[in-house]
Amino acid sequence: MNRRTPARRPSGRGRRPRRLTNTDTEKIGLIALVGLVALSLIAGVLRWLAAHPWVIVLALLAAAVAVAVWVWRQKETAQWERVRAQGLRYAVEHLDRLHHRQFEFAVRDLMHRDGCADAVQVGGRGDNGADVKATDPYGRRWVIQCKHRTAGWAGKPVGTPDLHVLNGTGRQIHHGDVLVMLTNGRITANAAHFAKSQRLHLVDRHLLAQ
Image (tube, rainbow, N blue to C red; front, side):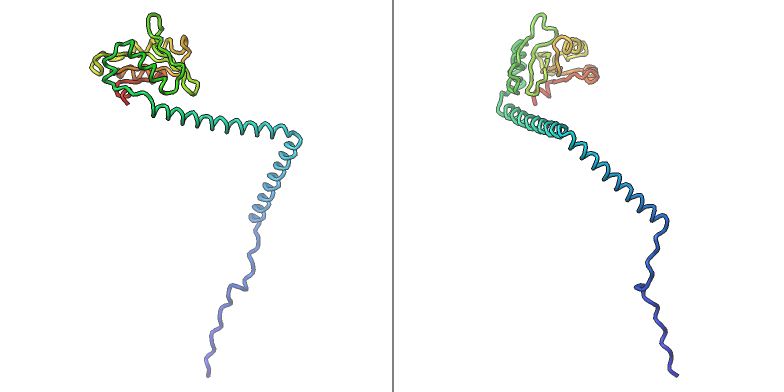
């Protein structure tokens, strides 16, 4: 007798498609609803803009102004960097040998170098804590108090009392945006902590040399 060949299992091609469950139907309905709401909102916004074309004009003008300001800033930054690269240089040892008033004029010249066309030395009797004042290319008003030390790093350090004067007059009297304590010597740790808490900028010998 011939053995019967085992029957093959039917392939998956003939399987019936999976029926949609209630969960699937709910998901599809939710997606469709969200799509309709989004289209409705977009259509409403477009209708509103069509009725108020001045809004589009203002938006375009605002974008144009923003781009123009960004371009201007980029040009100013590039120009400032060119001025600094080509400008004046002082060796910090040379600054040590200056008279304290000459030191203030040297700082003024450095501000000129960095693009502050109106930089002026104002130090002297009754200066109210400002030795050099200047406006940078970004329109910020700088108020700088200079502390010259003939002995450089070995000289008397700048302490918190010196910063109290700058902090008390720099903004209220001189209307400064950037308040700087600058020295060819060193600054105490307590003064550094106080400066950080009061948004004062410190330039000591090492930073000045750079």
